[in-house]
Image (cartoon, rainbow, N blue to C red):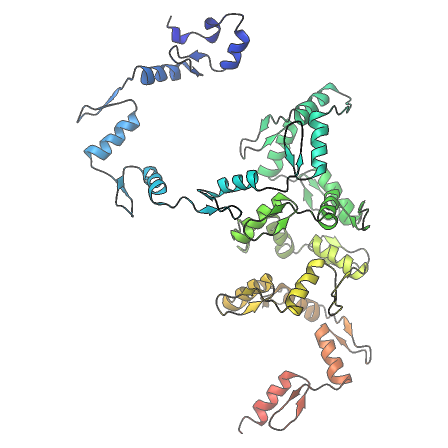
Length: 512
C-alpha cells in the first residue's frame, strides 16, 4: 500500500494521538508522505503530490511541445503565444494582456496612485479605505479609555468594561432551571462562541434559534405577528407587544432620573442619557467630523450623506431612499394612505410615529421647551432652535444651488428647490382632485383648507377665521392696525398687500 494513502492513525503512536488529532483534523484523512499536507479527498492528495513534488506536466502544446501542469496554463500559452492574442491593452503604456484580471492588476500596481486615502490626523497614506479605517481604529481611537487589566481589551465606556469583566472574567453565579440553558450561556457569554453562520450573509449567531429567526425575518421577509388594532405586521411577538404598549396604549415606562423625561423603550432612554446628560458621542465621521452615539448611525450617515447612496427604490413611483425603513414608511403613508397613529386626546391621525410624538409634545404636553435667547421664540426640539439661530440670527446659508447659485439655510430646502424648480417635479398629488404639488406640506395644506374646509386661525377681534397663520397676521396688520407698507412712488397711494400694489402700478401707471 502506498504510504501516501495511509490514514493518520497509521502514522502515529498512541502517545502522540492527541497531538496528531490537532494537526490532522478528522475530515482530512489523506496525507502527503513528502510534505505531510492533509487532504479531504484522495484524488486531491494524488494531484498535489504528482504536480508539486513530481512536477508532472501532462498538458503538452501541439505546436512547440512545451508542457504545463494545468490545462488553463496551456490554454493561456496557446492564446498568447501561438494565436498572438492579447485582447486587453493598458491605455497608459500600451502593454497588452491575455486576461482582463492581469490588466487590472498591472494598472493597480504600476500606474495607479495607491496612496488615495490619507489619515487626517497623521497624514499617513493608504491604498484603500478599509486599511485607513483599521489604522485609525488602532492608533487614533482615543475614546476607548477603559482598559481591561486581565486581557488588555479596550472599551468606550465604563459600563461596557464592567459587563465584560463580569461575563468573561468573573463568576456570574447566574442559575438556570435546565442544564442546556447553562451550557448555552457558558458557550455564548463566557467563551464568546458563535457556532451558527447564515449561509446568505455570513452573519454569526450563538444559538440556532437566533439563526433561524434571522433567516426567516431578514432573508424571507416574514412578518407573522399582526396587530389586531391597525393590522401592522411584525417579525416577532416582542416587537408586536412593544408596538401595542407604545402606540395604542401610549405607555412610556422608562423615565430619566435626571430630567424626568419619559421614553417608550429602554434603549431610547440609554441613548438619551449618554448623549444629553453625559455628552458621549464616540463615533465621529471622518469626512465632516459629525459625531454619533452609535456606530451604525455613523455608517448610515456616511453611506447616505457623503456617498449619496439611495439603494432602496419604491416599486410604485420609483422614488429612491437611503434607508429601507424610510421606503417602507413612504409606501405605507403615501401609496396605501395609512395613518396608524391616533392621538387619544384629539383623535387626529398620523402616518408616521415621529409626527405623532411631535404632535403630542407640542400640542398636548406644551413641549416648546427650547427658547431662543435673542427673540424668545420657542421650539419643541433643540435641533429646531439651533437651525433657527444659525439661519435667522447668524444669517448663515451654507447650502448653495449649483445651477442658479441661490443659497439656503437648510439642506432640505436646497434639495426641494432643485427638485421643484430645476427638475420641475411635483411628486405629491391630491387624491381628491388630482392637483400636483412640489411640497408635501403644500399638499396637506391644500387638502386641509380646500377639501376639508379647515380654518383653524381665528381673529380675536372680529372672529374671522383663516386657513393659515400668515393670513391671520396680515389681516391683523392691515385691517385692525391699519398698516399699509407698500407705497406707490408715482402717486403715493398706499397698499397693505404687495399684489395690490403691483396691480395698481400695472393698470394705472403703465402708460406713463
